[in-house]
Image 1 (cartoon, helix red, strand yellow):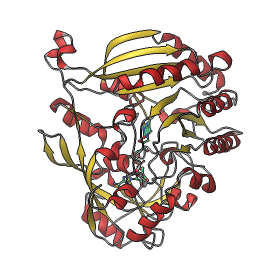
Image 2 (spheres, protein in one colour):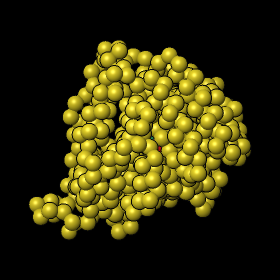
Image 3 (cartoon, helix red, strand yellow):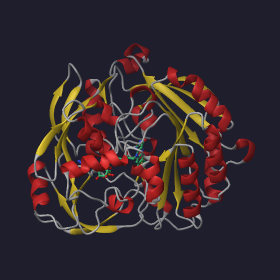
Image 4 (cartoon, helix red, strand yellow):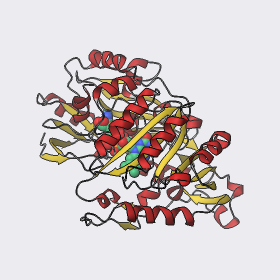
Length: 450
Ligand SMILES: Cc1cc2nc3c(=O)[nH]c(=O)nc-3n(C[C@H](O)[C@H](O)[C@H](O)COP(=O)(O)OP(=O)(O)OC[C@H]3O[C@@H](n4cnc5c(N)ncnc54)[C@H](O)[C@@H]3O)c2cc1C
């Protein structure tokens, strides 16, 4: 199969590596590439919204799965759908919201494939209520290193299922999956907004009220210091019932439309994003948000995917790209979160708004990221001193039993990573069972000796 060599990066646009990229339309073509592989192995890739090197395989083969994007079956009584793994959440919403179904879990972008959602076991604003994406997957079909396609489920082969959920493509190629969708009566979300002046008030409010909402997330100003450190805008909500809509909207309650309003230019002047411009932006954003608002109706794109309104926004960080850092600390370790915020806000790193959330229970996924506690995600442009800042944060996080998220990572030290994921050995054992020669591999896997 023809597979031209293409330089690939993740969404952060750092550290490109070349690979033979083959666009595959299904399991037969994927198997063909698998059989013709080189020593450098094979890896599936979705829409490349992971930030670091998870979807790269330097010198080897990369399967572009996005052409395998069909809906194979849909049961509109139960909301179970069978899809090819290259289909995006964007497409699922376009197809199924008008029929009264929403994806069970969505990331902050809808340009994520089902395969990528399972492989990273993505979480959304509803993690505290429903867990992560893989918990809504009834089965998946996995093309393994021996060329077989195995139907894997939490019942049929739980070890392989939970190694694949969050396993970053290293157990094989997910070719199909059955996903349980969420029934909705309208495409509008009833949103409550609260501005909080600092981190403490935010954490208290979230702790006291998170359980009342299906979805919740706080956008934090990571540049503000001192008494204003951690000031935020907290939005929480749930899908509105049809009779909660104004009469005009009740006529077409499941109407769903998206638009990309503008696109970032290809070449962004270096230096445009600096501490002063970011601080000014954050100031403006904080003050334009309502102090307290109740029952505001918002559309799905506005509530869930505000960044998707700007095409290719990752270009704004300029040619050097940026790093996304996301970590959790367990409940009871709020001091560690506060310490992390102090270090970030005083580092001079011009981070745009960061996102803070409370996770609920984790699942058996061996490398699945969510675990009970607080999670903070932030973008940081590549600047001098960044490595030392993030290494220090890793140590802080490990010391209190926290972890970082592989889908966002490009630089954690392997020793620290091992301490963050105590089930790593179990993951390795499952991988050795289904892929003894390590055919499925990635830049991330090599970097962390997964
Ligand atoms: C703006 C933005 C917001 C985000 N918000 C969130 C969020 O709120 N929550 C969250 O959890 N994540 C979030 N992410 C991260 C994103 O959801 C994950 O990185 C997701 O895995 C991306 O899916 P993808 O299809 O782009 O996969 P890729 O980035 O292409 O690949 C990611 C991993 O999945 C593997 N993979 C992809 N397809 C398959 C397949 N068919 N079979 C086997 N393995 C496969 C790849 O090998 C790789 O290891 C966000 C990313 C961006 C850019």
